[in-house]
Amino acid sequence: MPALSASENHPWNPQEASLMTTDALRERGDSLEDAFFRNMDRKLIDDLRAKKEREEQLDELAAASGIAHREVLGALLDAGMHGEALVAAGLVPLIEVAWSDHAMDAKERDAIMHAARDAGVTRGSTAAELLSAWLERRPGAELLEAWKGYAAALVAELDEADAEAVRGDIMSRAQAVAEAAGGFLGIGSVSREERRMLAELAAALGG
View 1 (cartoon, rainbow, N blue to C red):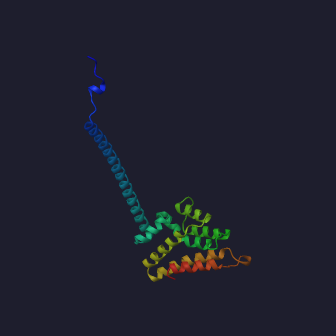
View 2: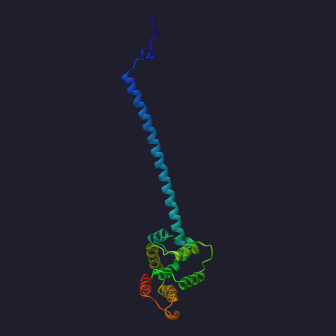
View 3: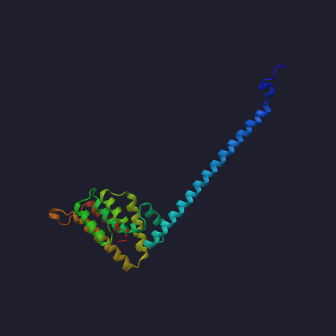
């Protein structure tokens, strides 16, 4: 009697084949689902970690600035202000005045560097690195907007005498930068753009 072929030993059973296909699909589907949820868990963990880090940065910024408004602190954070870098926030008005006419004059640069040294900005610090970048390229509009929020919140935290002292200090340094380039023979000439920026800064300080 001739031997049966493999197909004759195991005749094809459509129902059994269908079950095998269904099992394979289910197994692959389960694997895909597991992978999906593992990735979702990883993303959730990453999101939670990022949120925690941001909250810690906001707390650090609040301690350094004395400002409690989270919205203002968030804007400062998004504009690159972190802890030590907050020192540089006091130099933002000077930077904005110097760039208001779309050019950074060498004398304006010197005036800003002098103000930075007076403010305690040390070489190699975060504040110094930020300032160096701002001197080379005008920062985006978001920095000025963040500074305005910072300035408004700052003066709101102070009594009128202290607020006036802060306004006077910031505006006198900004005025000095505006006059630094000078006009004829270097005698304080302030451009229309610089005057407009000075008025904008004063308004942000409630002046």
